[in-house]
Amino acid sequence: MRHAPATLRNRDPILDVLKRVLPEKGLLLEIASGTGEHAAYMAPHLPGIDWQPTDRDAQSLGDIDDAARASGCARIRPALALDAAAREWPVDRADAMFCCNMIHIAPWQAAEGLFAGAARILARGAPLILYGPYRRNGAQTAPTNEAFEGWLKGQDSRFGVRCLDTEVKPLAERSGFALGEIAQMPANNLTVVWRRV
Ligand SMILES: C[S@@+](CC[C@H](N)C(=O)[O-])C[C@H]1O[C@@H](n2cnc3c(N)ncnc32)[C@H](O)[C@@H]1O
Image 1: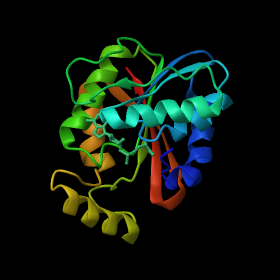
Image 2: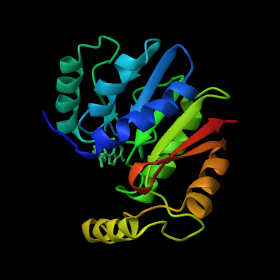
Image 3: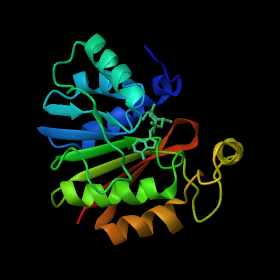
Image 4: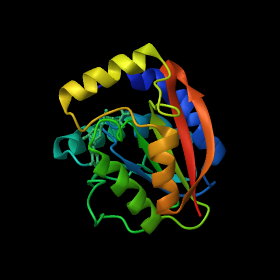
């Protein structure tokens, strides 16, 4: 099974936020599930939640299903191919959405598509939970994030650590979301909770 080392560091702090903001029961749509380790670790701790993992990368889907099977959690559904930037998604309703570490490592169109899709499928008040590194008021918050930005730009000039205040918040508001809470996470990351207006 594939392993993303950062998941060991961030999974409990993110899970604490999920426990606080998710509805007691319902369907959570995860975007960009990657290795599936967040689903496999968190879903067993959230007994009322059915977890739908997805990724754009077809190769990840098998990894996600392997991780889900190893977790023994029957509430994790088979992974679906979903490109956040696409106009049509294979899921048309969810009670919450979660996306970890995608909007900086994808073209901006993926963030736009993420909010547009979330606006289509979430009901009023439902949470969209985003985890990752952010700039604040245009500035990097730590040398590690600045170095990471350099690495991202080296991969693809369209990638980059997004600014929560001047880029993501305006996009969220244009898309029909209001800022709920910002939780500080390890290694200068944030979990940001948006609510469908
Ligand atoms: C850095 S990994 C994060 C994986 C996992 N969420 C985690 O935190 O360990 C980024 C993931 O985003 C996915 N991704 C990139 N662009 C995407 C898009 N437009 N729609 C959906 N997933 C995308 C990649 O396939 C990859 O699995």
